[in-house]
Amino acid sequence: MNRYFLSFVFCLLSFVCFAQPKYVFYFIGDGMGSNQVLLSEMYRSAVDGKPLDRVQTLMTTFPYSGSASSHSASNGITDSAAAGTCLATGRKTDNGVLGLDPDGDKLTTIAEELKERGWGIGIMTTVAIDHATPAAFYAHVQKRNEYYKIGRQLSKSQFDFFGGAGFHHPQGKKNDKDVNLYRLAEENGYVVAHGYQEAQEISKARGLDLSKLILVQKTDDNGPEHGSNLPYAIDRKDGDLTLEQIVRTAIPFLDTRYDRFFMMVEGGMIDYACHSNDAATSIGETWDMNEALKVAYDFYLAHPDETLIVVTADHETGGMALGNSDYTLHLDMLQYQKCSAWKLSDIFTKLFENNGKPSWSEVKAIYREYLGFWDKVDVSDDEAKELKNLYKAACAKKGKDKKTLYKTINSLSDAGVALLNKKAHVGWTTNSHTAHVVPVFAIGAGAELFTGWHDNTEIAPLILKAVR
Image (cartoon, rainbow, N blue to C red; front, side, top):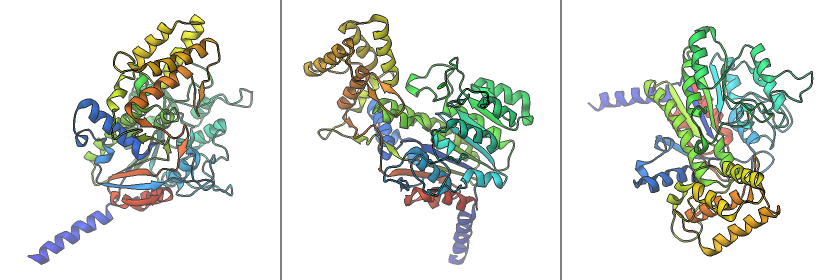
């Protein structure tokens, strides 16, 4: 009887060891350190009144997990270009560089390698499709802000699917030599769909005749930055494109055209929120990526022996600390924030533009509506005095707005969100990146490779090892 049992175990182990994924989902939460994940779960627990194990993100339920370091070749703290390159190629490079090693030699990305093997490839994000992380999988440039050059390389990549906000600067320098990047993409065989509904209509009408697709958000703004990012989840309106919709479009698109596919999915706005030290908005972005992950997980459930899902991050942003005073958290305070620090900044800016010198009562009304101050969140006399002094400085045009990586935030918005964070006992050390380790989660065929401590140079090679 023992002999038959051992034979069964051997067959089972052989199956586990040699199972090869045909479908790979590579999720990257930009700026998503372990505390960003934990904050999202603890917030939901506090607001819903449920135990922490009842409100987990999907990624933390995966059976295999580990951690990864994130430093670049040039510094202990990486930028997204160097980190993205590492996650895409398994090789370190200098900050600011995409797809090249420190000597300037071209590196082959996992997406390029698998495309060469005949896999379908999808690259998608909540930010611009030529931003650092998505670009790390197809572009090779010395400077991450060479957006027009990166956009040209996107069209030449011949990857099958791209999804996100659009191009940063589709018209380049706006001279006769610069072809609009959307037109260039179409010349290289891509069809551009504006919004989820249009993508569904085009896919239905064209069928398998549609070989390459770019899905971007609908916009009425033709300015140079119109493709910079999708709206934050906390600011989203009906009809706005979401990461979940992009993934939901990409899976059948690739699955009906290829026997094997690879998808890189970036939750890019977690990073943006943490650059602004905006805890409530970062929570929304983490859960938003979780919704996209659920779509991939549903596919995994239908193909459990052929699918690998890996979730990690390129770096941590903000130096988020859960606790800033005593042995307590009050994360339920964050539920009263009704918009991002970015949107609140725009609201205050427009108030001053329209009214010149609005009253303190008008400013208080905005704090009350969007942050719950005085009604839901206690504001002490000293805290109110500090906010009022900032209001007076703004009236005198002496307010010191805060410039973060992606947006300059009105001083009144910055102070209000900072105060709410303080009330919740969430702290920050920086408006930039840190050297914190990042989480790694995995499920499916080959997932056992991703346990323990890793350097981020190991993630892409381990995926390639799994698919062999």
